[in-house]
Amino acid sequence: MRFSSSFSFLITGVCCAFLVISCGSSDEISEMGTGSDSSDPPAVTSVEKGDEKDVPSLVIVAKNIAYDKDILRVNAGESTKIVLDNQDKGQSHNFHVKAGEDGDFETPIMDGPNKRSVSVLINTPGEYQFICDVHSQMSGTLVVSGG
Ligand SMILES: [Cu+2]
Image (cartoon, rainbow, N blue to C red; front, top):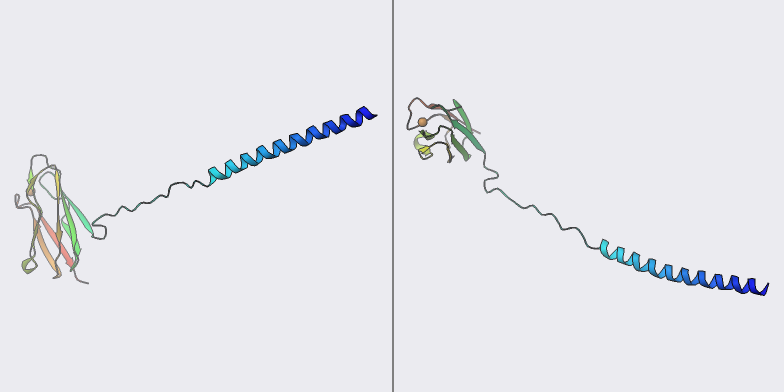
């Protein structure tokens, strides 16, 4: 009787000791867990801006000594970037619009394959011819629409 009660006391004491130890260690673990949670993932910042983001652009391809488009359309008073994509290897082309008093707009003459662009800004609505200065048979119409 006496032995069993003291044994149970001992057991209880040991249990309490274990509880305290386990409680203490679990607190440490949870604190460590909280600590690692506080490290936020790196903020993702994408601030790449194209310089000509808002400028409309058109591409015209020169291939087999011909443009791939007969008609290009732009708006009057609005700058439009026109890209000449010369895909003719070893063949020279350019893109040239003669817009009268609104001016000449032309890419340099270049051997393909290569690309050059020209910013076209025409204020007077109408239809203008564009040509390749190397090949007179390469031509088309630039339609300038008024707003
Ligand atoms: Cu040409």
